[in-house]
Image (cartoon, rainbow, N blue to C red; front, side, top):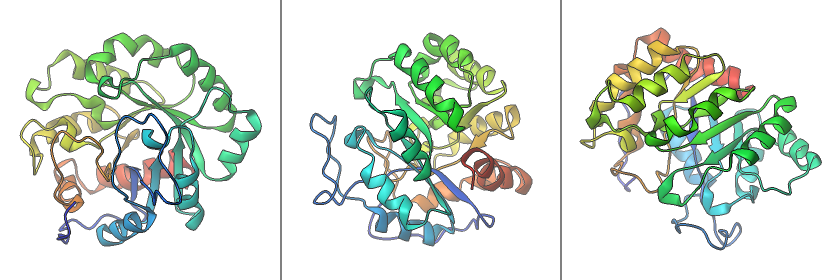
Length: 280
């Protein structure tokens, strides 16, 4: 995002939710974890609030970024500013107790993210994934998975076996250049047609092969909406960590949405579905 800001053309419906965004900093208050895979600039809760005000988004789901590891303090601080309209997705460590999980729930956490993408040097620990899923299911939480498209085959059985809602990030990070018939996207469609398997139509700048305004992702988003109209979500992915293509302004992502579907589809995508999953 540059200093120049666009005014979006598309006005989202009342109660619209950014279901995938992050905050970084301020680092003098919330220092990043040692051994992090990258060091981003400060993009704190005040920057995020100003962005959402400009875009007309009233609800927020903050996803814990890997640069903080399992120290969720910065995210929890942001949620506490508006607990009615903000929720969070945490990263957990192997030693987190049930009492800690309950405190996270009371603070607005509704899921746990697992990052398996190769460029962040994440390897799937399926035993930890299954143990965590069993522990969080009684809280009504879900598992959120960030993976590469070529991992959908490897991880498909594990995803299908989980007995709680599963959310897959960024349209499965498929490559738009490979078309709708690519095996990875067909696997993704098969997964999201199943009950309690959700998909985020975020990361257009990650999926696009051509860059802004990212219109080559539209057929993929429409196919996913057709496959699971009541289990699709949307988010800005602000501030776009390690993005494939730059995002000059998040208004460009918002203005892509009318190509995804009609007003009823966008009402589900922006309001009804996140309300149900995150408990707004």
